[in-house]
Amino acid sequence: MVLFILRRLWLAALVCLTVLVVSFALTHLSGDLAASIAGPNATAADIAIITKNYGLDRPLVVQFLEWAGHAAEGDLGRSFLYHAPVSGLIRDRLPVTLTLGLTGLSIALLIGLPLGILAAVREGSAIDRGIMMVALLGQAMPGFWLGLVMIVLLGLELQWLPISGVETWQGYIMPGIVLAFSAIPALMRLTRSGMIDALAADYIRTARAKGLSRTKIILKHALRNAAMPVVSIAAVQLGFMLGGSVVIESVFALPGVGYLAWESIIKNDFPVVQAVVLFLAVIYIVLTLLADMMNALLDPRLRA
Amino acid sequence: MSSVGIAQALPGRRRFPAFRRLATLLGVVIVGTALLVAIFAPYLTPHDPFAQDLNLRLIPPVWMEGGQPTHLLGTDQIGRDYLSRLIYGTRISMLIGVLAVITSGLIGITLGIVGGFYGGRTDDFVMFLITCRLSIPLILVALTVVALVGSSLAVVILTLGLLLWDRFAVVARTTAMQVRNLDYIAAAQAAGASRVHILVREVLPNIANHLVVVATLEMALAILLEAALSFLGLGVPPPLPSWGLMIAEAKEYMFFSPWVIMTPGVVLFVLVLGVNLLGDGLRDMLGADLER
Image (cartoon, rainbow over all chains, first blue to last red; front, side, top):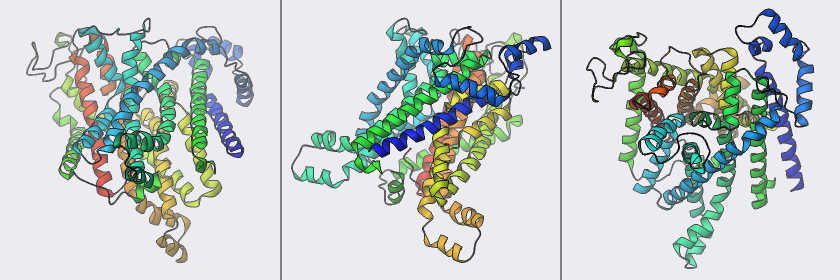
């Protein structure tokens, strides 16, 4: 187990390092970062000043090492736009994004798990087909559009929910539902296939032979074994949701990390972009690491 | 999971063949129609999709009050014909879907086959690349690239193509692993076939059924992502009639005339649904089982 954890940590560290390089390289794609920062109306003198002030005239390797060194210490640089440390900007906005992500994941689990179980129990029936159809519909739904439609319908016509902002908890409902839509199909399919496999296993036959009730067999024996892949996919989906929050947060004008990223991209605030890409990637890496470890804890066969 | 899943794919229970066939047919019809519309767009449009006329602003669709039969689906905020723009938008979506999938397919399949077939260190490296790719926030990176390199159709296609290869790699790798120990591979090796020959002529055709299904999934994803990028203002540049961009441009007016965001959203949804239905049908027909 110790060896497994060490090996997994080593891999995670390598991936982190790669992401560090990628997020640095990403913002240097345009070739001349100073010109991008200065904007289209800048003079050559402006660009020269920016180049000098931000140290952009030094070799790329030096710039990277300096940035990476600071990033490793938690210093993600300063925003050009806010004239403040990026880590502080992210910290201020993180609660909104996390609340949104967790709301989305909870809604997705509340809908995806029961439907997936139901489809598996009634495999091949009309109910199963119907539920799988719902998964297909969900997969085809453009999230940003669903958000707009909900704003018009629930926010404006019916006036049930606020159309933007997070002053009250109701503000998280619509964005949470939209975000959940992106994860429901995957969760549902995985729960279904896991349950179908589990229900076909020998220990289920034994449980049946013992005369246990159907509900007990499904919930206690089959679900426990089907839950494992679902836990890890839920972690992965949460990572994707936090990454995808950039779209939803701009639709609903939520002041989260995703909105910050979008604003920074539009306004050429590259230290922030770099930092958010890195930050979200690290969150994803940590989430998958935790999921793997939890699985290894539950199932010794995976510790190979 | 996938190795077991593929092995068990064939004897699966199919209790509703009629329903499945109907769904597949629907997918074929939708994607086929979109393809034809995309190809013959110039002959189908009733108006020039770029022609503005401020006297004809925000005319509602013909079935609503104030609609005009000359503009079946109405006009947008600067008087451009909605139907004509939607028709040209089909072109953009299909183009992005197909070209992004070809790009990502080339990358992902190559990596996956090489990793899965050779195993060992090579495979570790491929797995590492897949893990790195999955860790990087997709939409954020795509937005940044488009913002820095400049928004154009080609940039969007290339960016999505370079980002969406992960599922191709995962599936190609798993399936290549399964065929590498089969007899016909050994036979080809004994016959002195080159490495490239074995990978391209022996392995690839035998895992192609799985890859076709992945291609439909990725095409649906690419179309959705382009719409999202364009919606955020960092995808296909105006005045091109991308459906996502149409929704973004009409957003300000949706409170007074909600239909302006409805039509582009509905066609986007229908096309993506069609591609997914087609993929499901192919999965059944080709005996490929990928539960994700």
